Amino acid sequence: MNPIRSLQNALRNAPWIVMAVALHAIGLVVIGVVYVSQSKKLHDEVAFELRPHVPRFDDVPVVIEPEKTVRTHDIPPLQPTILTTDETIIPPDTAPQTVEEVYGDPNALAEETTGVPPSNTGPGVGPGGYIKGHKPNPFRQRGEHGVVGVGNDKGIGRVKTEEGVLFGMAWLLRHQNDDGSWSATKLKDHCNAARGCAEPGADYHELYDEGVTALALLAFLGAGHSHESQALIKDPTTGKTLRIGEAVKRGLLWLSKRQSPDGHFSRDKAFLYNEALATMTLAEAYGLTRNRVWKEPAQRGIDFLQRAQRPNPSGNGLWGWRYQSRMEVEDFRKTGTDPAAAKELFDADTSVTTWCVMALKSGQLAGLDVRTESLAGAEAFIHWVSADNGLAGYIDPKGAGATVTGKNDHFQYHPAVMSALSMCSRIFVAHDPDDPYLEPAARQLVQDLPTVSKDKLSVDYYYWYYGALALNQFDGEDRPGRSGKYWGPWRKAMESALLALQNRDATSCQHGGWITPDRWAYTGGPVYATALNVLTLEVYYRYENAFRGVERARRAPQPDSATAPLEPK
Image 1 (cartoon, rainbow, N blue to C red):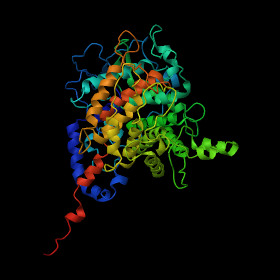
Image 2 (image 1 turned 135 degrees about the vertical axis):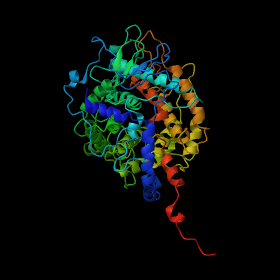
Image 3 (image 1 turned 90 degrees about the horizontal axis):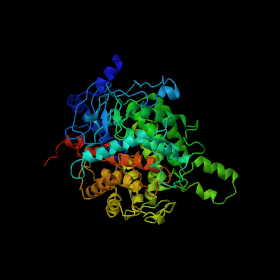
Image 4 (image 1 turned 135 degrees about the horizontal axis):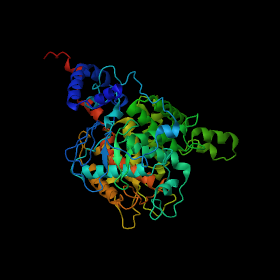
């Protein structure tokens, strides 16, 4: 037995009530000082944090327990079961490759110990709520052994959505490559030849491997599973028991080894979707564990994104992002003869920009070096493309509500997708509950709820992910003063659509995955679809509401006015 690891596990599994009492007592001592210093900086100083998520077992047919302990529940047939016990034996012929077998001894996998808060600081989330002298670690609120979704019973309910998450994770584990990556081009290597997961005739490309690998890893990180996770998941289709932490570790190591010295991850020249997703993944891995192995590649990824950001066409400040990096465009301008290259330097689009915003915010939460100028530039671009009616353009305001054309134009296009992206960028950068754009944008989204048409051409996982993220922040259960008229209808429609499309055929390796393509699945196929939809179903607990800190600061008593002497009558 390792006494150090036992002590770490004990700390991480400390009772919530004890932690809450201790943290609230400390919070009462420091709250006055904190609010005085922060009340004048509502939008600049209130940090967006991940929501503390407490596992609950009362009516969830999933087993998540400390080591050496297994609690039994009535588990429905084919229910994927998560265990955290060393007593589970994995037969040698079904055991996944270890990291040592693939990469050698990962002797650098150790936590940083300076300035790291204790785990499970959930009760103290918010201004003044952390132990004095410790830096907040909001990522750890997800729980290091994974979580069971909260949600309430107004929709399909947390049991069904968490079944969807677990089935999706099992599918991802089943389709991971031996080197730790995921790739749409190699799905056939993991599938039954008679009924594989790849879309017939699909022309997938390895260009997107870094991006889909990052997306798959985010699905595990979003449920609290880091490389340290001791959880095991029994695949209901194959019967094999797989180690989640081992799979996450191999994926993170593969991704970090893809990184070039300048900080980009794509195998050739930089492709900003890949770069944003990979950077976001490593930043979250570092934020969740404080493991120094992930810190350096995450910071280099942040640095690359900031260098790749386009300049503001006004000549003052920064702007958004596009597929290529700023450096590549500038090099082309030096050597090329295309007169359009001068204008191209200022090109940006709402989709890539929002992913870059999410990556920078993850880095900021993890304590990495993120320049405020980069976030301000992104905000300036997003404001520019947004219209007063809640719509937003893809590359300019003239295109607000217009169809973004592409390879799969036979699919239905949902104009409100840009509204959802704009909402997310605004919410996560500014934390402004009074932003006049948000409610008109929310109305645009609920006018086009997730639905599954008979021909499946209405399916748009990308729209549904960002729509869920935006409306959950704007009007979800944790939003102070929520109305419920936006998130309620969206949630019900989203849950119904996603769970209806998830494959539940236990006779094939499709089980647990989202095999039905959407408008954008030609890039990453079912790996992209499954990972993204797992993230959508994790929306209930992945992020704390961005407006809670602002509202708390607004409600706090103002010391200056409270102590001012009374005027004589």
